[in-house]
Image 1 (cartoon, helix red, strand yellow):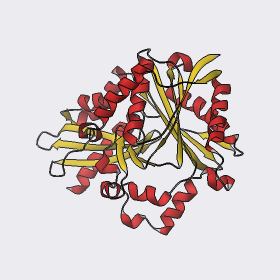
Image 2: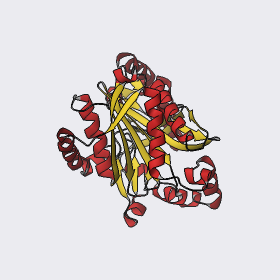
Image 3: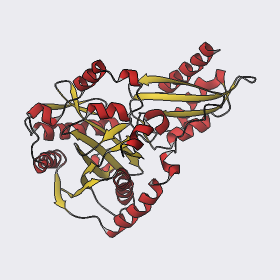
Image 4: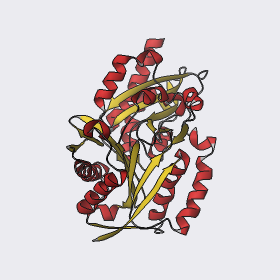
Length: 355
C-alpha cells in the first residue's frame, strides 16, 4: 500500500492557492515531499489557464469592481470563476506511482475514481472525456493536469453550489449574450451537489467520500500531515513571483495597432487561438502567438512551437508544424498537428476576408 499525505489548506486567495500548486509540484519533482492529496477552496477568484491572456478571457473591469482576484494557473485549460462554493482536490505524485505518463489515460483513471467518490454522496457521477465528470449529462466537475519531469499534478473542482450569473460576468462575454435564455442554457449544462441533493452535505462528508474513493482506486494509505519546511519556503518564493504583473500577463497578446490578424480552431483537445504578425511583402509569418484552453506538457512546448514558426513562409507552415511535432515529443492531450495547421489556416483565411 502506497503512503500518501492528506493535506487540507482551507480557504485561501488565488495567489496563495496557485503558489501551492507550484511549490508542491516542485517538492515532488525534487524529492522533497512524497505523494499528496490536497483539498482547497478559493476566495472569489478569476483564473485563466497557463496558455491564456487575461485581456482575451476576463472582464477585468468587473473583477476589479467586485474585488475578484485574478490569477494565472500553472496548468492549461480555460478561464474559470472560483469561490467558496466549490471544493478543489489535487493529486501530487509521480509517473511511476501512477503507472505511466499518458495524460489522457491518467485523466480517465483519476476522474473515474473521483466520480466514484462523488457517487458515494448519493449521485450517479461518471467520467466524460476529455476531462469532465458529469451527472445525467451535466458537468459537476472539471479537471486538468500537468507533468514536470517525473512529477505530476492532477486537479479537479467539485461544484457544491454555483453562481452562473457571476461566472458569465467574470468571463469576457458580450453583454448581449448575458440574457435569460443564455443563462438558462448555461445552467442546463452544469449541475451542483445542492441542486441534485436538495441540500449541501457537510463538507467533511464530501471530503471523506473522495478520500475513500482515491484510497481504494490507487491503494493509498492516507495520513494527515502539514507542509514541511522546504515546501513553506518554496511557497513564499512563488507567492512573490506570482504576485508580479510579469506572471499574470505572461501571455499578453500583441497591441491592436500592430499588423496582427487573429483566428481560432476548436478541436477535440480544446480551443486554439492564433495571432499572426504577417510580412505581406515577403508573404512570411513574422511571429505566431498561440493561446487557448488546451493541455500540453511540458508547458514550454507551445513557446517552442511559436519559435519554430517564426519567420516562416506561409506556403511552408504545414511542413514546419509537422516537422516540429516529429522532432519534439510532448504530451498534447487530444491534439494533433492538424489542429494547429487548421488554426493557422483559419487565421490566414480571416486575413484574406478582411482585405
